[in-house]
Image 1 (cartoon, rainbow, N blue to C red):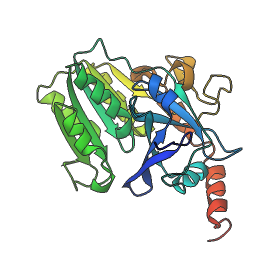
Image 2 (image 1 turned 90 degrees about the vertical axis):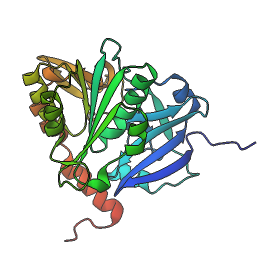
Image 3 (image 1 turned 135 degrees about the horizontal axis):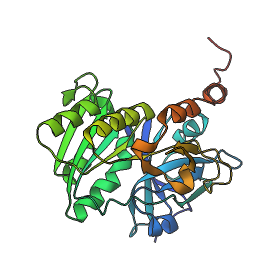
Image 4 (image 1 turned 60 degrees about the horizontal axis):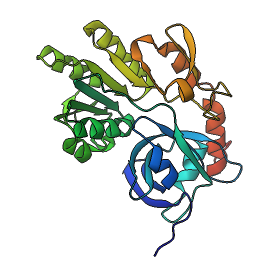
Length: 283
């Protein structure tokens, strides 16, 4: 019998440049988590707490999968770990699970690594026997993720890239608009990706009169609503992504404010990353 370490990395898979999928041994989290929820992990003692949406899980194997893009200090430290290494901490499930039970015809829209976030929703909808289309967009073919998995868990998969290297050339909004104009009828759009992408999707679906749900991956510290770091404005009211979300009515979210808040610590994060790589102060 092989004994696994607490929060051990059982699998690590590179899906794109600086993007890795990690399968973590966390049986208590796997036992209770549902699509749409997230975890907060710590890579090393006294390390930063960072949130990641759960992109898959196995209750029988006691594992939770997350997708991580290396963009800052903590994600760079995580990228240095390999199979057999263990995280310092892995807390969850946090946030409210996705509830698409009242909708019959759903289209899931994923941009970039947001594609991983909509994968558990696709699996759940497929299991429930509901109609589900999936639109996956990326800058180019090398950044398209979970393509085979989506093919197996959707009625229709539509790929779109900025440069046309795979699927249709354009943006996810182009594909969504084209599908609706061709006669597709959706009663819900579930969109996850970069903030500007989600804003563009919501602007379009508001014109089309389609209810839209977005997952807000705000900056977060404690995940309990205490720190207020993940606050955003929804329908003119202050909400917290960690306890009120992470999913909200996309037509009620103040995306302009959310985008501004997401840029607050860019300089500090870059400095920490440069320190880690030994390039701080170098041209």
